[in-house]
Length: 104
Image (cartoon, rainbow, N blue to C red; front, side, top):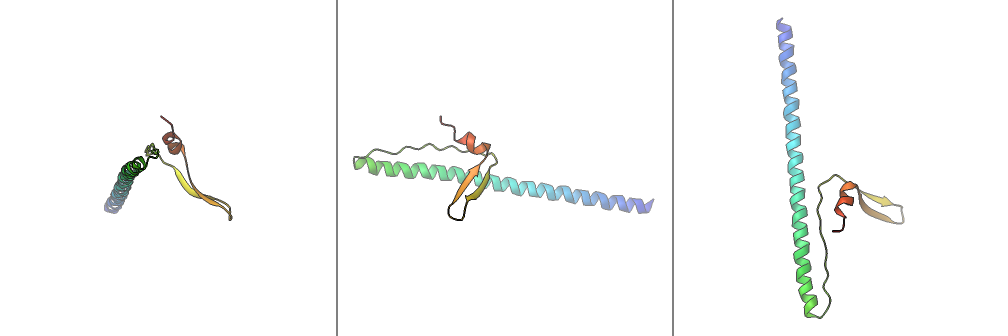
């Protein structure tokens, strides 16, 4: 019975290590996603502030202002380079892109 007891103990310890490693990985992924979301929001705010400053200059020069809309989506997408040797474009594909591009 003692041999089985050691085996079961070792098995449970290995399972616990797997659970801890999975939780650690999930936490790291969550932190990575949170950082990316914050960076996306900061980039959007920066773009709006920069555009507003540029629009003030345009207005002082008698020019029309430029307006933009920014929307953020946290869905999963595929990002890749596509094309041929002569022309390569970077694109993002997925439902998250399509949902973000809805014109309000």
